[in-house]
Length: 116
Image (cartoon, rainbow, N blue to C red; front, side, top):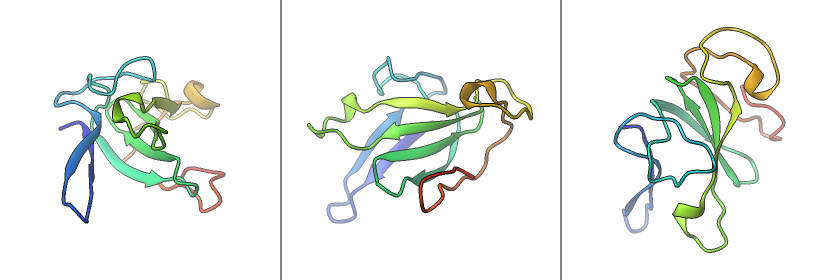
């Protein structure tokens, strides 16, 4: 369903924190209620708890969703591209100059210095 949802174990409340029912792409300049993910498959949280790292398979990109908002307003959270530019392939590079292909899994290193 192209969404990332948060479940509160204490209350069992379910809240969509990114994405929409259909596929799409949007970075930080658009509200998270519009289509912004296309088949997110793997998630990990940075060691400091500030970012949720997402593999966006059909784009293909690795995205970062800010988890901390001083007002606890989910509509103010920002989603940005860390690596990849939507072109499928295998090319080393920095940030959006790198090409990725089918990112089914990822992990953030314990020190937060790398995403694998």
